[in-house]
Image (cartoon, rainbow, N blue to C red; front, side, top):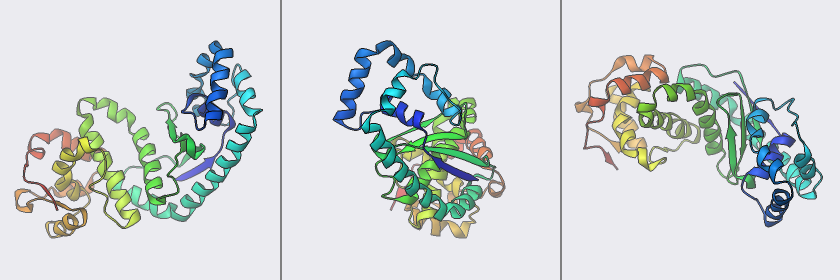
Length: 280
């Protein structure tokens, strides 16, 4: 799997126009455009999907507003700083890609696509864009991207994988919390823990904490843990359960993430039953 980091003028301009304002100067500029070209401004909001699906060849039907953005000194500065951010993200990826891909493959056990385009935004834009219609492309740029490089790579992979699994989530929308909890266990928790060398199992969406703790013993079985390995993982992740209360489901270490989710959905009545799990 390869990530290609690039800057796209139209998507960058679109995010400047329709995302949160990154400065008062940008806010004033947007307000002026909206007041003067209200109909064009409102119509342009829908361009995002088409841009993201055709980042190489997209040309708007009406480029009036985009050309106005391109001619500003603000855009020139934003693009220069975005290029710098792109280079920084690319260096992080190049340094760690082998480890990321190896662990993603080991955790998911199903193939992702060979190539994804990451369209970089200015970090002050603090945003990402995805499309379920064009799963190979995403927009990305956050203020804290360079603070914890392993977390940034984890978050990018989570975004890619969640988009890849969007149809599966839709098919299982009645069990969306189980799907979300397992995706968080897989990527935000296990992948980050492997990449950073420090457990991340207590972090994440607090509304999913209870469900994740219920699934956790079976998650360890999915990772291939035998009964004697589980104590080590419990100490690593600071989640405790009584091993003797569980039958080791040996087949789980042979299935992929989709099948593990299906297993948890099918067997939720006895998985979500323990009230004695502890955080240590």
